[in-house]
Length: 84
Image 1 (cartoon, rainbow, N blue to C red):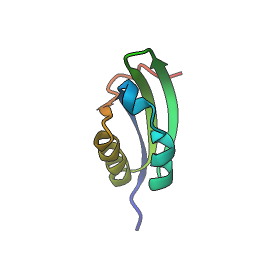
Image 2: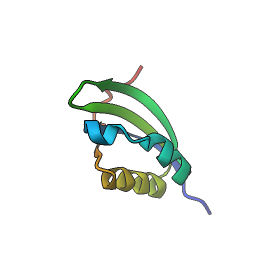
Image 3: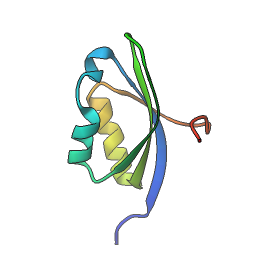
């Protein structure tokens, strides 16, 4: 039996060097996880995205660990600041 599908939101913070890589594309090719960009902002020093992932808890954990290995800071969205 497959795990229950859930949706979780995270803030992803990229340095300019890491932000040049096609990480969303690579993640989508590697993992069976839906994602939705909820918010994004960038300047010359940092790029921040709010992403919502939908899949099983185990798959989302794998994606989070993968992003961290790529040099991305990943933090859960605790307050519903990106709704809308």
